[in-house]
Image 1: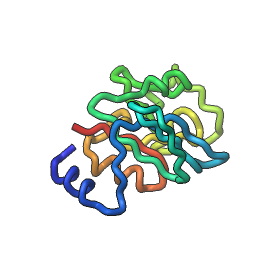
Image 2: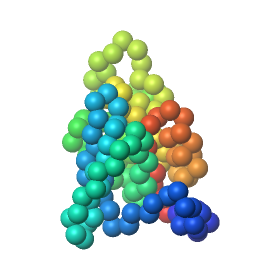
Image 3: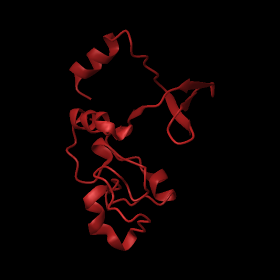
Image 4: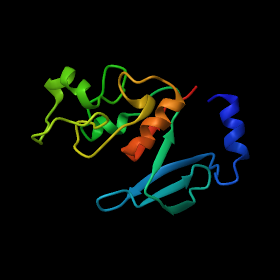
Length: 143
């Protein structure tokens, strides 16, 4: 991540920085309602009520979980969304009559935004912009 972004995040009074912390559970009915955060050193868990989640996961796509649940990935491990799913039609089992939406994965209602997407521009601003355009959840791979 660029130093100017680190400085802005660090100085922002309305952002809580949780280092050495993993998101270990997501909960909700039709939409995200709660996340569980776990301290990797102590194992202490904290539940946070929220309907939004943005994850900055590093320089390599951490998408093994997506493969386990059947979300199509490209050769580099990036999540394939929207029109790009046509290239991967052999893997696609699309259950709806409509085509997948632009940021939608092969699982209806599951969206990916930012650097974790196949063919995306690998910039945090792009990831935030995509995530802020109604996607609701996103992942960014930053330097």
